[in-house]
Image (cartoon, rainbow over all chains, first blue to last red; front, side, top):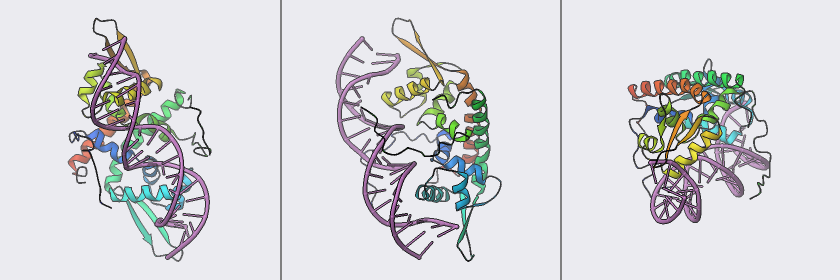
Length: 119
Length: 119
DNA sequence: CTGTATCCTTGGCGATACTG
DNA sequence: CAGTATCGCCAAGGATACAG
C-alpha cells in the first residue's frame, strides 16, 4: 500500500552520475539477456524463456513488466487464437544495446582468458 | 555456519553465457563506479570514498574485498607512517573498462534524451 | 500460451560505533 | 587513515501451483 520509508534511502542521490543511472536499467536479474535477445527482432514470451534457461515465469514476467514500465521494451498482444505476446525494444532499449554488446565482448575475452568459471 | 541449501540453486548454470558471467563482475552495488574511478590511476580508500558519495565504509570495504577476491582490483598497503592503502585495477579489471565506458556513454545519451530522472 | 498467486529465502546493503 | 563489529532491513529473486 503506502510506501513507508523510514530513512531517506540513499542520502545523496547522485544525479550527476550517468553510470549509476544507466546501471539502474541493466541491473535487473535477467535484464541484459532480455535486451540481448531482443536486440535484432521481437520475440515472444516463451521464446525468451527458452532463450534464457533457469528463469521462472513469475520472475520473468515481473522483469518484463518492469522493463516495460521503464520504457525499455514494448509489449504487444497479438490478437491470435491462442493469445500471443510479442516483446520488442523501444528506442531507449535500442540505445542500451551498445553497452550490452560491450559487456558481451568483454565476457568473451574473459572466457578466453579463463578468468571466468574458475570460481 | 554450515551452508544448508535445500534445493540446487540455479538448476542450469548458464556456463555458455559471457553476458551473465561478465555481469557478475559489474553487478555489485558500487562496482562500476570503483572501476570507473580506478581506470586511469590508483586511488586510496578515502579518495574513492570521496569520489563515490553515499557509501558507508563497511559496504565499501566489503565491495573492495570482493573485487580483490575476483581479481579485479589490487590492494597495496603502503608502508607509510599513517597506514595508506592504494587500490588499482588488475589486468582483468582493465579489461572491464570498455564495458563501463560504453555504459557511461549510453548514460550520457540517456540524460540528453531526458530518459533518466523522469521517475 | 501467457501469465498470477502465494510463500519463502537470501544476501546485499545501510547506519552507527568502535579499533589498529 | 583504513578499516571491522554488530545489527537490522527489506527488496529482489526463486519454487511451485494455479488461472484466463
